[in-house]
Image 1 (cartoon, rainbow, N blue to C red):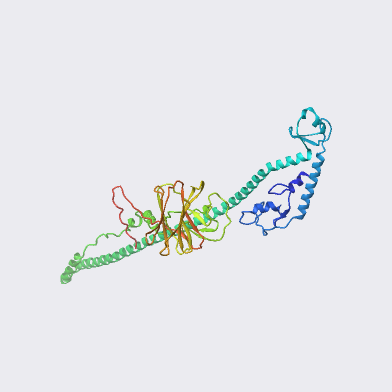
Image 2 (image 1 turned 45 degrees about the vertical axis):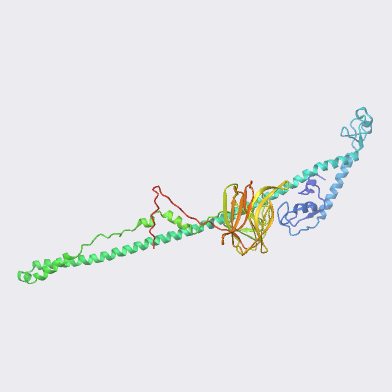
Length: 478
């Protein structure tokens, strides 16, 4: 058979000739043992070549490929046995011995020659078997290394695919957040323009009323002037007869109050435009929140589901996620995105009616019994029992007087204390004392479908001008 046939008859995993080959539904074949080893530790059976999910965990044998592989091995063994009949280049005798000192095949004449005096020899077949076993020993770690490389390659393929999924999901969530902000700004813009239009209508109506009243006064004055002028043009007798009435009519008009310019008639632009962006931003605090801890989805167990804003977590359906070094080794848990190696830090978690939870901090390493392991300090609530545990101390049962709803976690890294308290009653629950040396990350564990949520911080804006005077109060639009 050709060398190409050897490639076609090689298992894609071990790269040796097929041994007991099986075939998947995608038509790819593998050694049965290699495939089982590949699937070990995988969340679902999939083809190592095309990553297609296998519908069967025990795929059928490929008998045709098995027969071809065995025929190829038999022919290769026959060729190898024919090559063993090679002749000695010095004595033209068959090479039947192997010199252990020179590590080369020799004939019986070479054995008795001076150059091989006092050397050790083995029959060629025994020496070949020993050397093959030795080579197999050296080959085994290389094959193991290849398996590791293939597994890493498969994980990298999963990671590359998941990056696209993550990017698409994150983009969607970003758009949803900005959509809410746009809706808020649009609603606020409409409200403020509506207030401007209302003021415009009100002041325009006021000016119209004043115009109408003034026009009525002007018309009355004009009528008085016109009638008086007609009296002045009348005959003397008629003029004198109507004189008193004309004088009285004329003298009444100067008693009218002169119209004044209207104060406050113009649009109050200051009310609508003064520090507009600041007041909009200040009002926006009502719809935005600041979380002291942001949960990192890249550390979450595949069985956990995080909220879109990464502030709450619950148990859910198992997800197929790529293996990454950031993911916590503790099942059903997730870590905060920011680690602490100094200072004091506090955060509050709403546990609600969740019946199975753990809260605390996780460090990378702690020395225990002569070896290093992950350092964990936490309180756990399960089956109605509250306990405290750390990798530096034994487990301790804590008294529970009522159902806890909100837990405050306070870390004093430099002071070496981790405190837990009940937010509602402001009572102490437990304190860990330890000399912390490694970076600590907020830690949450749950196997319940009810969410655990990081409570937001209340925002407060404090301002101080250069003259140390407070900002003037804004005129509210109605």
